[in-house]
Length: 279
Image 1 (cartoon, rainbow, N blue to C red):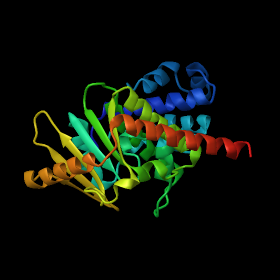
Image 2: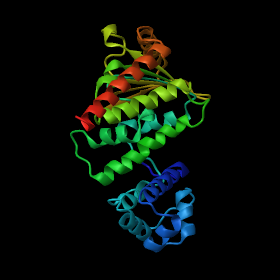
Image 3: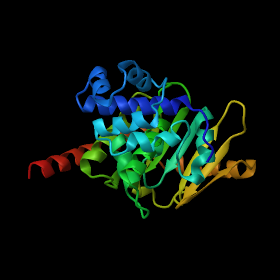
């Protein structure tokens, strides 16, 4: 994967430094003294204007007990790190004016909270070190920044009910994750629909689909399976995917009904988490 200048990655790196510094209860001045760096340099790193050199990164890792995160993320600081089969789709995602996704098993990446994403990236057949996971986590969370602009891209998410019921990370993580989706839906930033189990078989049951539209390009479809994914640009195939999405959407709950269901399931997780803490 090619590495290219990407200020957004530097900003995310800086945000992670700030998060860990504040979690450690340190001011920029206090961190600068312990890491033998100037306070101004730390401020520039946190703002995404500068990157540390390897020696600075090692000292930040030591002072903040970051497990090597700041050193290991340096080689990919100005690029993106994702599964190889998703690289092309990621470039399209950043340019899209409208995105419509169907998720059969997991919350889509751009909607994932930090604890949920960390659990997803920590699991799987291929073990990852904490440093590898944290580098992937930063990239995953960076994708969610496309939601910071309210009007573009327009986002529709179609969730199979299995996404709500699968307790990824446990009840507390799921409660937070589902309430995050509800908040996005209630603010009208994301339109949410749930395909209930009662719908039975539907047109998209076989796997993840993301449909994207652009100002200056024809629409595309991205479909994904286990360790595989493909971007389709052929108009006939894209249209087939769009029709399948529309058919499945017709079997889904309305936006309001979906938010009610998600909110109810989140409350169930909250009660379960409370019982676990206070048996």
